[in-house]
Image (tube, rainbow, N blue to C red):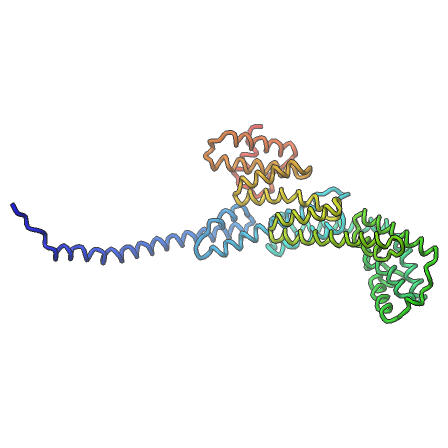
Length: 407
């Protein structure tokens, strides 16, 4: 039997109307799905902002990291603020946690700047930056009182010499005595005149009065005084009082002048590397910051600001930062390096190392018992160091594991 072929016109018509009907349907469904997806992203972003406003940084970071769509750029800005805030607080607290013999005015000023930077990022942020500023200023005032008591005789001698030179119209010589006073204590009263004002006045007079050629040749007493200046400058350098040391080295003449210039150059280089390292830290350039701290440490290992300690501390900071970013492998690497190198903050390093390992254990479905055992070892070490996790911005699940884990 011969079957008739289907009518090609009917078939073509039957096929042609289907895309016409399906295309609008697909578009509508796509738009509905996209709308639901954006609504979900809006809700996620709003939740993240609420967590940020309540200082729940860990929760906020986790939410901001997954935000997509029109709020993605805003979420990145929030993440940058949280990171910068945490780094500023960590750096400031690293100074306050030092022993009394490791503190000086310069590193306390650095700590205050870090806490102030945190306040500019979030004025009502966590971990009490204003309270830590007050603490740092109180420590700074104590150090200043101790310095005044120690250097009182030195200040009186320089004040007297400055006045004698001024009365003799030897203004450049007066500068050599009044300006170190101003550098050490701008408000120091020298015969009723503040040291800073006296220094500025002597400099102005020195510029307009050509008295240098009229100065008598150095006497044996003045030569001995120059020797004492070099010795005083060297002592200030060893005591990490670089501001005073630099001023005193500039005043050295004679046989010690060459050595004084070398010391002055070392101070300048040291301060350059430390300043550069601080700038790198603010830009989160950890490797460059570490390299600059190490360069400063080569000049003076125990110099002001503790460059060697800062270089080591970067491992702890990077480890904690990596943990909060969810990069647990990097966190383990940096924290392990810090534990091997440092003697301070061991409790914090062990806790975050344990938190990193237990996080991996949870993410892996709690299958790898070796991760749990490693976390237990780190938590045990943290507890032995007396660590308490009450103030840490950590997942309640991790905190519960830390408190309830069998040791």
